[in-house]
Image 1 (cartoon, one colour):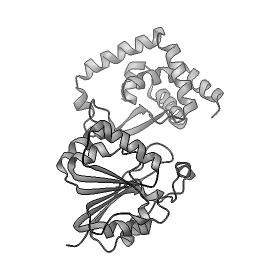
Image 2 (cartoon, one colour):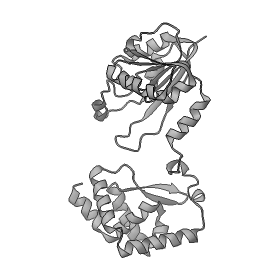
Image 3 (tube, helix red, strand yellow):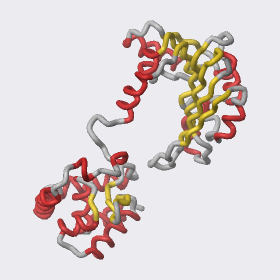
Image 4 (cartoon, helix red, strand yellow):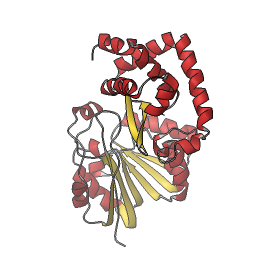
Length: 304
């Protein structure tokens, strides 16, 4: 859609009222009817246009559907909405609708906890972020002698190193390793080492690692099968390989990030690591943001 189309979409008074309300919280058609004092068919028609334009989406909630603003808006559409929202925030009707929404909450008599039951995984709650959960769960993990292949600038080092007896960050980029060293210096982690080298030819001895990690780095390898073979070589008996990578896709957008491969299938990863045992693979839900990349997680152990 052109910017003119965006502005025409947002110029409608009812659609603008709906958007202001959804900016405060997700609502059902019945709740919007209550606040806007408009008929169901009228509100549903406007919601359909907003959804088609990519401004809103809805999720089932019992026999109803709850509508919410998208958080992955097209940049032009997002700019248009934010500009119109700021210009209309102090309109009399906007303030009236806001007061009616407060009254609805009071009549509803339900807490936020009750309202999001069944959809909590989609809702924001203060402090309940993936970052905080990862920091918490990783305290239960022990990495032993850990090798991070394709470690980049060491973004994961702060998280992993405290749970490892020693951590070796391997990357072919001297610039990345310099940034990683600077990061680790500020963290005062004495058990972290840096090695410049490729994943396809790890400059490390056989059976020298208890854990080998590929954290979204396998797609950068020229020869991923060989890189995984090297990981198996340096794993000690009972050691664990963990691969977090992209699932097979056709998006050209990944090429701009320097990816050598457009993801992998679980079958490929299992075949390339068939010398290991106890394979486990998980395919995570696709990202909500276009082009909807999907992540695969593979773990496997080396025989003792």
